[in-house]
Image (cartoon, rainbow, N blue to C red; front, side, top):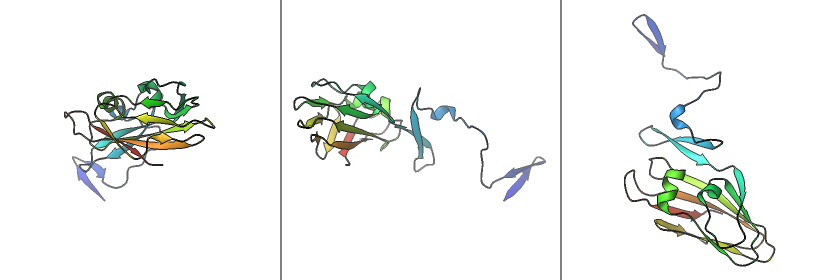
Length: 161
């Protein structure tokens, strides 16, 4: 289907891109990958995808923002440590755009043959499911932004596998 406007034909059919296409306002940051999803109004929302790995320290230090955004977090605990996530106020601008229910997934891989490890939430974050990762196993988590733009930061952590 098409129509004419001031001597030009405008197509309303499919749009195809044959070359590299850059959507500047949808950038995820340096060396980051993202998916573009659309909200109920058709507005685009960027969801950051962690595709690199980080090694967590063998202690009870909190998980840093820099490590969390890598996506795959390996740890070899020598004791049953608990690692705390950043606050919702830190997570929201790091991982989410303006849209309520934007999400970010990450994995923790426990390389120890004998020690479990755990994560804990922080201010503004609540959890659903077990936060313990047994020895020799891994866990997949999803952080979901709960609040709307401009509200008090609020994030829910789900264990999904």
